[in-house]
Length: 126
Image (tube, rainbow, N blue to C red; front, side, top):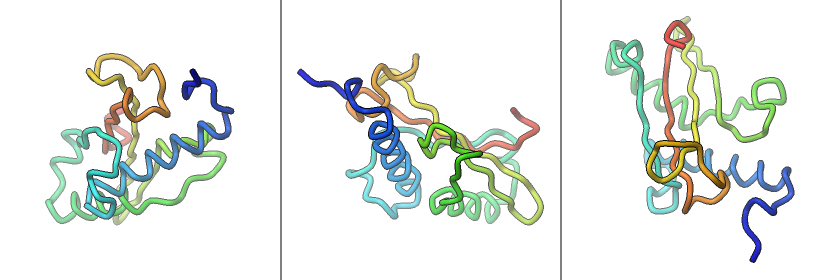
């Protein structure tokens, strides 16, 4: 039996990146939720303290983000990004957990064994 662990690392990275992209797009409904990997979208207190319009603008920016490059995305997983909102820097990060959200996923490229948590945070909260 072949598992996702048997995938070529480059193919596995591309698969994880595509799943992360689908998950990010699903937070605004631009990817049907049924087609997106399962997970949660959260923001830190600092981001939650921003005006609702700013939160919506940030969420839209995360959902449409495509500024990944070798420096900011060394594994090719599309898991981190930096957004500038009117001079305020905000980071997003996708972490890959097991289905109970307790440990890292045993097979990150397998959506049946992986749950995503997308966090919006201010750099000062890291």
